[in-house]
Amino acid sequence: MLSKFRYVSLIPLQVKISLRVERTAIIPFMNKPISAAPRALNLAREVLNIEAAAVHALSTRLDETFLHALNVILRCEGRVIVSGMGKSGHIARKIAATMSSTGTPAYFVHPGEASHGDLGMITSADVIIALSYSGESQELVAIVPAIKRQGAKLISMTGNPASTLAKVSDVHLNAAVDKEACPMGLAPTTSTTAALALGDALAMALLDAKGFGVEDFARSHPGGNLGRRLLTHVSDIMRIGERLPMVREHAMLGDAILEISKKGVGMTAIVDAEQHVLGIYTDGDLRRTLAKKLDFNATPVRDVMSANPRCIGPDSLAAEAVQLMEQYNISQMLVVDEQNRLVGALNMHDLLHAKVI
Image (cartoon, rainbow, N blue to C red):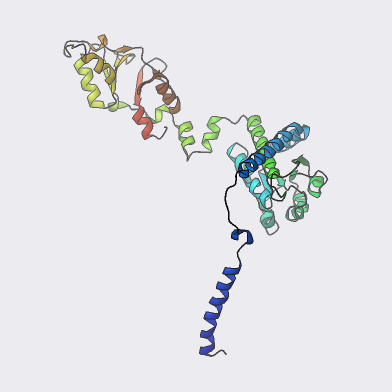
């Protein structure tokens, strides 16, 4: 058993060892002075050009094999499972996320974790998309027999059609590139860009084949600005009932001004007995009327209203109201039904409050 003295004496020794390791475990290149040389711009442009050329070359190689892969996924009754190791794994995660948000349910499975139980997530109804540029990633190759026994379809995306992964796949997509953009030819750059682009091509082709539209996209993005813009309808935010500003066509101008002030929308609708919209009277109209020095209590509002105002339907998207307001430089709109009866009103503040803009 250690004495108390010996036990205490170990503590500073451990601290000394830890500090010594931290001082010496510095990556060699970190000691070199770093500055952005003019050649950096040329290198950056070369990287972009190399990767752009690789993606273009990839598009020229697309053939019936791509359609075969597309049909395998379209016939899938389960989920699409995307897998890859290292940098290919990062690309696989993004492909799965893109597919999921565009109408093709997909998720990522780490090949290493798959060998330790996650294979249980895969069923015979699923399609697996495996990414490996070499086509020889041990973690992926190791789970292929289990995938095959399960009866799931396997689509591989590699840069080597003669690789193990390519040969055992139901469909192989060739994502080969001429060279990496890395100056040393070591870091996956062009190859991962090509794989990502090919995954996007698959996702977009699936989106089109399934007839996935704007409303569908919005339903999978309800939490962001895009969801609000695409899912919010005029009927969701328009003013109704007691908040709806309107006067009859025989009302005096003074009555219309009081209605504008009371309802706080910056305008009032002028309607007939059945609430058909005849016109609108706005704050801007009021300013123009003041210059004419009219008698507010003796001038019918129909004499100074703007006839045939811009209107919108309650089922229209709120984003459409924004577009119309910007197009015609107005800040209020009346909402009417198919018979041109007044059912609501909104102004720019309502759209801002709803975070549509």
